[in-house]
Image (cartoon, rainbow, N blue to C red; front, top):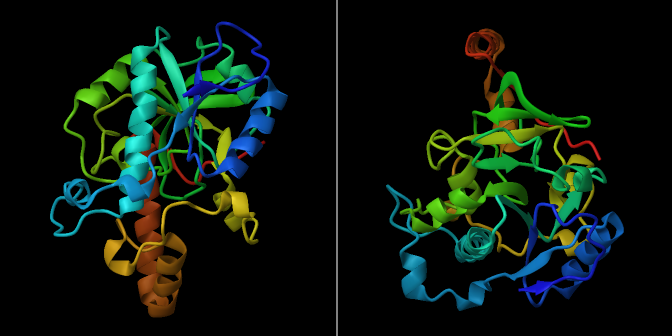
Length: 289
């Protein structure tokens, strides 16, 4: 790792770690400009290339109930995040923040990183990123605030690992744990496949950052080359979890008639009422730059 050039605004700033493949100099240059303009110093974490994942290691990353391992790109991504966790666990600071190099950040990111008193007591992870997916569930109660951003306990899966704050003690726990053999975002932010139900995990609302490819999808345009994913396209048999929400929703609309649609509407109403009784709310977390 190396300390990237930039103007450090505060010696108390939460240390930032950016995961970057050595070959992706375009991404390194872009994130260097973005963070430099904001006055955020960071350490570059050398990402693990997929080509370095041997067949024997790859076979060990097999999900429960499956006879094939997850994609080699997901394994390399997971190991890259573990390198960032090692850096956080070894540092003297209470927290560290991990970014992937294709992230787009809001300008007030520097305000949140310049202090940590807004982080809820006992928080293991604070997710800064949003994927703008509807299945996300959070507590209605606000657990923290910094400027226009509020913090809520995260209760339902919210995938993506492009930006999150990790407590030093939690980084050490993760490195010592027998980690589930899922992609890293599922291990961190899924309530049944990962640690979401076990750890104290929170979500910043509105989201502070978003992957460039996700923002391009929301804006219905093709992403710039520097935002195209490094993880190889997954075949249907390699996909983790259900098919993409948009395709699934289109399939449901095609199959449902009048009465089934009414049943779906009633089910959604019951789901919303259930969340209300649990003190939660569901829906997409917006990205507000």
